[in-house]
Length: 193
Image 1 (cartoon, rainbow, N blue to C red):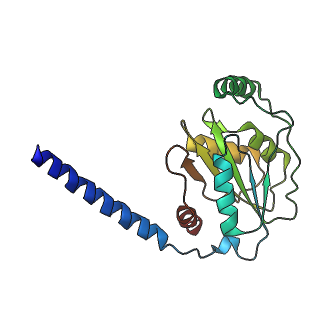
Image 2: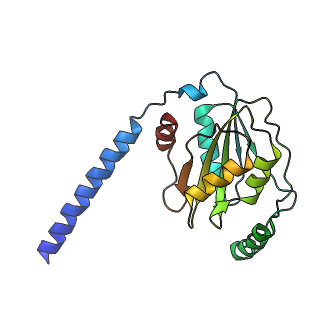
Image 3: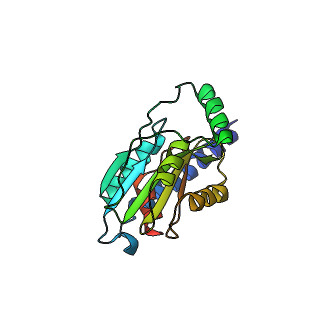
């Protein structure tokens, strides 16, 4: 019994030391604005149903600066996740896109777009936003939160089909269950754009 307890304590302390080292490594990451963001007008746009995408958008905006705008639906989805999922699946099959508030992107060079992933796809409000705006001379930088599955290649292809720009940067996919994305992890992603 003492052997098992002693072994468990040793493993615990090894894991604790590894976690502290990883935290310190992330803590020391410095944000050097990537060339793509330098001297540009930046907008962060997001849709968030459960608050996870909103949290990431706010952290991101606090790092890169610029403006931040939330997509609002003219008709809200129900709060019950199962009911909402059933409605969304039906709307996706029908090709339905919900009505949203207008967000003018014409004065921006770079648009970060944040979406939850619904049924392995971009959320319908973000699809509406992407389809309704002209990204011709803009840089698009998507980021996603998800709790189920995410077919990343399918989602990237969806974006390319919806927008009229070839300047789409590396997307961030963040699993929303568990620990939320830290500012340092966002900086690490931004430094690799």
